[in-house]
Image (cartoon, rainbow over all chains, first blue to last red):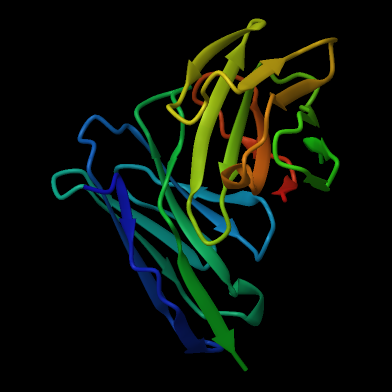
Length: 110
Length: 113
């Protein structure tokens, strides 16, 4: 069973659309949750941490459901610059290694 | 904004050769990591390093791999005898402490021929 599973996409959406990505994780001991963004052949960059109560950062909203071991990312009012691969990432705690999903590719089209 | 610097950006080497990938973590960070990403695959953990020793390593990090912090600024990954399947993007990362987010370097693309 894969540790972190994501729909690989691609999601092709028009500018201004709302798009949602989902992710499931297998390790119930996971304590820390993140969404990273990765542009083609570049390094992963932290988009946002995901907190139990859910959190929002501008056009981005992340939700966590520990009971279902499910994480989501919602992007509102998509911009062309949002085109990238979105990586769901979990870790057990603190300094334990990050476990990455394979990513979901998003293309925002003019 | 402070950044993690990696050199070289691209390295081509012959199978069986040794390679050293170099990283300069952010200066006040205490935890250092190497991850790799084979083309089209997910990012995978290799090793973490704290207080001048390995704190954790994955199954990928076998006897062919080693890490070193030779001075106060550099953090290196050595692959002793490269194989074709070592071809990947290697990312160095650092963090300030436990529970802090990572900063990744821009990566070294290693191609083994």
